[in-house]
Amino acid sequence: MTYETVRGMRDFLPEDLARRRRIEDEARRLFRLYGYREIETPVVESYALLSAKAGEEIRHRMYEFKDLGGRRIALRPEMTASVARIVATKLRTEPKPLRLGYIANCFRYDNPQMGRYREFWQAGYELFGSTRPEADAEILAISHDLLQRLGLDFSIKLGHVGILRGVLSDEGVDEGNQNIVLGLIDRGRTRTALKTLKDLGVQELCLRKIRRLQKLKGSDTEAILAKGEEETRANEAAHTSLIELRDILGLTRSAGVTCQILVDLGFTRGLDYYTGMIFELYVTQMAIALGGGGRYDRLVELFGGEPTPAVGCSPGIDRIALAMEERGLFEGEGPPKELLIVPIGEAQSPIVFELARKLRDADIAVQVEVSSRGVRNALSYASELNFAGVLLIGPREAASGKATLRDLRSKVQTEVPFDEVVRAVKSLL
Image 1 (cartoon, rainbow, N blue to C red):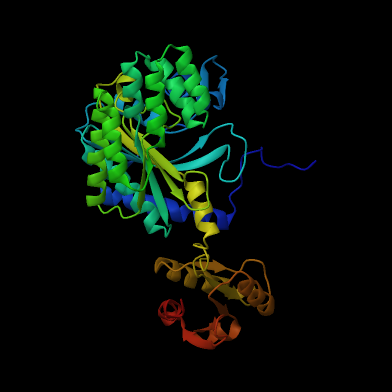
Image 2: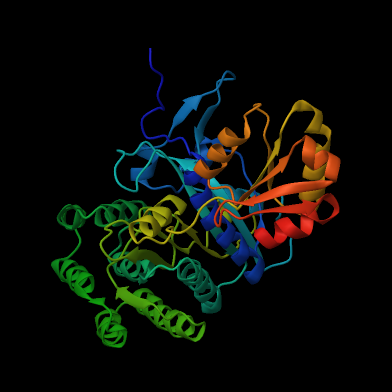
């Protein structure tokens, strides 16, 4: 019987993991640069917590089950609910604003396809305690900086969920039905969404306004916002949301976001907890978003905390890696340059281990040959794995106090006194 990974799950071999780590390392640099403190949460949470504002589509795709104690639990499908739980409980007295970051694996029972897996990895930045547009702009700037530092050419799709919610609220559509309608729009089922509204008794005038708002999108942000102001002037909540979007956009440009921004006034996302600005990140020739986020001002309160406004984002590490691979941004990268030390005969092993310790203490990556290979086979092994060099210690070297250092790139071989090995290897690397 041949055992393979469960469908939608993956093994990460050394090269795969190195690529993921590169993105994670850049995400962590931004934690430090923007002042976000990293946290971790359990992979398993209560189903009630994870499903509270997940949206129907995500609830349907959660890995949920009962544990041996009969409790209904689930694998986290995303991280925001878990982070909001921490803020509502363990960090409720922390001074605000509070900035938290994470790198985590999440699970959804999606149909596996390009860039979509059942276990996937996200980075995240969550800012709690500010209603100001400056907080929204900071989250957009972080998302921009991450993709820019990784060498990607990308655009930001930007909207505000309060625009459509404001229009629907004026028609008396309650929040539950709003969530259903916005979820349908997010999945591209606009006709079904409009039919649902019609069945709820929404007037044709309102339906036409929603259709017009959905057509207001593109890179000419000023013209789109101006038309949006006209469309929403009679709807106070929707108009206020549009003005907020204008303020956020202006601050985002001031924060150094230079990529193309596409404003979309009919844009929604598939999570019920969003209350304000929402966005997604795209690269050309990839139909799937590399990440996204938005404002969620009522989630902490829902989980028993004080009313706490919040905004955040979750770049998708797997999708970013896929985009980088397609654009050749990993080419030329390889494992760190290492040295192989080869004892020629068992009597030389003590000297080899002493030299290996000195090199590692100097922060030099070293492997010791432990398979009793001869010199020829050891050199072949080192070349195949792209070692930078080989240090040979045989009876002659032990007697003279000098190691033989072979540069595998130039094929030049030199003798180096034991007390100068660290300097010589650093020069070679």
